[in-house]
Amino acid sequence: MKTLDDLLGEGVSGRRVFVRADLNVPFDKAAIDPQGHGVISDDGRARAVLPTLIALRDAGARVIVASHLGRPKGAPDPKFTLAPVAKRLGELLGSTVVFADDTVGPAATEAVAALQDGQVLLLENLRFNAGETSKDDAERGAFADQLAAFADFYVDDAFGAVHRKHASVFDVPARLPRYAGGLVLKEVEVLKKVSESPEQPYVVVLGGSKVSDKLAVIQALLPKVDKLLVGGGMCFTFLKAQGHEVGKSLLEAEMISVCADLLEQAQGRIVLPVDVVAAAEFSADAAHDVVSVSEIPADRLGLDIGPESTSLFAEAIAGAKTVFWNGPMGVFELAPFAAGTRGVAEAITKIDGFSVVGGGDSAAAVRTLGLDESAFGHISTGGGASLEYLEGKTLPGVAALEK
Ligand SMILES: Nc1ncnc2c1ncn2[C@@H]1O[C@H](COP(=O)(O)OP(=O)(O)O)[C@@H](O)[C@H]1O
Ligand SMILES: O=C(OP(=O)(O)O)[C@H](O)COP(=O)(O)O
Image (cartoon, rainbow, N blue to C red; front, side):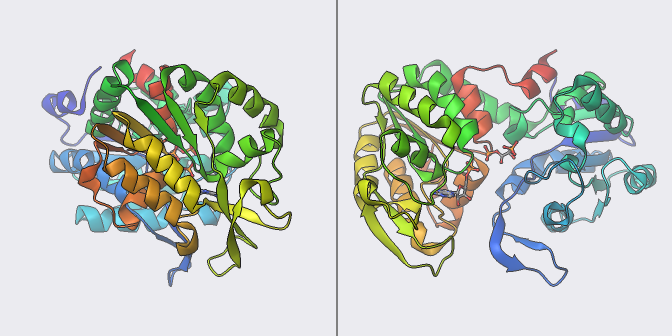
């Protein structure tokens, strides 16, 4: 695999370099800025790609940065514009970041043509184009052709998206000389060690809201781990499979039988919450109570694991030599539902072993809850990506760089 250092050694002054970054940063759930844009709540993912952007900029490259943000449906959607991210990236870089308000349209084409040596341009959200995530090779390829036409070289530093077979991750690198950025290299190096020889006991903690993505991973991880602790939005499909009613909580109805099979296979190694914080609605000032998982009221939704579950999870974590954690235990962004995530995170910081936290929101939780980042072995920018790496899967973005 060729690296950014190889590219810098070849010389990039005046050359156009396409950088796929993961600038899918979390936004404050309530705030709006004076321009009507969302307010970034944690810019860790933008900071993580700065070394690559600075090295290219300072070497005189014309830097074209591209990313997705959220999950828009293949068409422009102002809710998911990267405009506020361009502004923040400019502040972090200490130099102007030009923003194109389309991805491959006239604005982007003009902005690429006007780029000066040492300038950085951010294209609008890749997922405003159906070609980016299409399952159809030709449709993805046509979009990749347009992106590749902008540049002479391709650098992938979007670790959080390397598990996606998307145009900017998988198809553009097939069309240009390709290089791995420093973030991708560092992430792969750490995760390789954990996946090849995790010191036992190995505990995996899963939560968050991307339920169906992660249920698929559990099957593959189960044989490798001693305990799998499940909280967050994830746990309700499992609780339902155990026969509990979950009220209005997040539920993947079509996955209930899969969860039942997983529980049977796991023979006690999947640990579920015994109590949850059940709220009247998804808001910080909603009425809420701690209830047993067998007593979730029909008109309430579970927004955090309860204190007994937090202690149960902390106990399982305490004896571990390796812990991988992806996905918050609750809606930590709202203060009444942050205790489970805080308790589990604190337990992970105390282990006598190696811990990895992965995921945009999980890493953001560590920072916004004021936990000591240095108490974790590694904080990964990718949740799904690191889970799939640990599962032993070939990741399309990594494979594309290795070809
Ligand atoms: N019980 C729950 N119900 C709904 N959403 C939840 C629940 N628990 C956690 N979440 C949400 O999950 C989101 C993070 O999920 P996910 O994207 O899977 O994690 P990561 O980005 O770390 O991989 C957070 O915004 C959090 O508010
Ligand atoms: O946020 C991300 O992944 P993560 O929540 O698993 O860390 C990445 O930006 C990938 O986003 P996606 O899961 O919408 O493809």
